[in-house]
Length: 428
Ligand code: SDX
Image 1 (cartoon, helix red, strand yellow):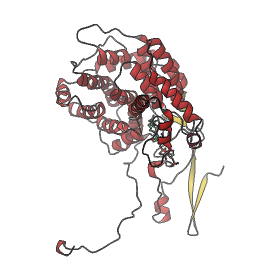
Image 2 (cartoon, rainbow, N blue to C red; image 1 turned 135 degrees about the vertical axis):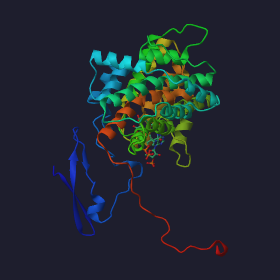
Image 3 (cartoon, rainbow, N blue to C red; image 1 turned 90 degrees about the horizontal axis):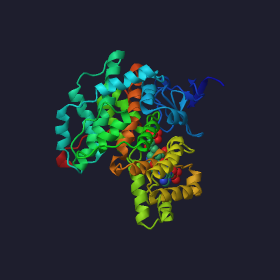
Image 4 (cartoon, rainbow, N blue to C red; image 1 turned 120 degrees about the vertical axis):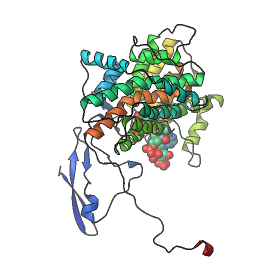
């Protein structure tokens, strides 16, 4: 294959390098497009065709439904690794040795205390506040208590920031839930595993012992792995562009949480459950909602379906669908919502509108069903997504800073008024 792309504009030919990634993807390097063509740029709403960076962290093949973290398949990692191992892999590039993994966990535990003044910020929120707004605020507030911005060129400084946020974030997640439930804020237990500690902080009642349920622990560990990174999705791109101005790590993560909140992105797992509940209330009339999803006059979309990159099954959805069956059966939970979801999936997979547009179930379609089976409230589902995505955001932020990427500042095509004289107010 030639390693040059040729562009012809008004009879003038311009050549641009073709670059190939390690998975044989090909990109046109247009770094010098504007300067060599005398000002011509590109337009690509939603960046559907535009790469923002070169990255070594996560690979997706949307046509084949492939997802891998640092070269390891999501199927193997979900089956054989635990969440902290995957977090270490994403951030530092290699699976940890046992010693590295044990030290990583100990260092995270050492950072798992949150300044008691943050409790006052939690107290200031109304119980009705959406947990994602609370979590984004608390994450940004961490900057106030950990003011030193990260020196990314110092391995030690970067490691310290990584274990600090991985230690404190689960506490903020738990406090966000307990605030809504009017429960005292818990600091967790250093003798527990990472996921066990998350569950205990979230669910321990002050007047009773908290009994771990291994099924729930294993299911949550797997869900966090499946959500841990997903290349340049909306929230990760947000973390990268905020960090590209050299804003701090916690401030960049807070922005990413806000981007994830949207129902077209991470907020879809909550929207899926609300949609399935509405269908159930409507007598399970899935055909009505399928028609709404296809009606261009109706803003309704089938939540949990479709994906910017996957034009095949989202590999994570396949794994979560199997886990949903297992977890609910193991927990003895009969959830009619699961049956409605399966019925809706079958209808969509056989409907011409969805087949033609290659709209398949994505990661959010089944995850909410498991979270609900585990007793997690619906408006906390996207918070759980953020807990899983945290190491991916950190890894992508660190890569962007270590590669000394320029500040993100897209161009535009101006289509507004051309130059016109000012009109004094008494003449308008
Ligand atoms: C996540 O990017 C990531 O990697 C994200 C994520 C991650 O891990 O970070 O994977 C997590 O965000 C998963 C997606 C969760 N969102 C939802 O489930 C919300 C419902 N899905 C859609 O809103 C939509 O599919 C998007 C936002 C996910 C993708 O939208 P695109 O790529 O911009 O596609 P599009 O809007 O241009 O749609 C193409 C066509 C359109 O119809 P036509 O104009 O061609 O006639 O497909 C239709 C759309 O109307 N369409 C849908 C649909 N999704 C797309 N029609 C009905 N229901 C849907 N869900």
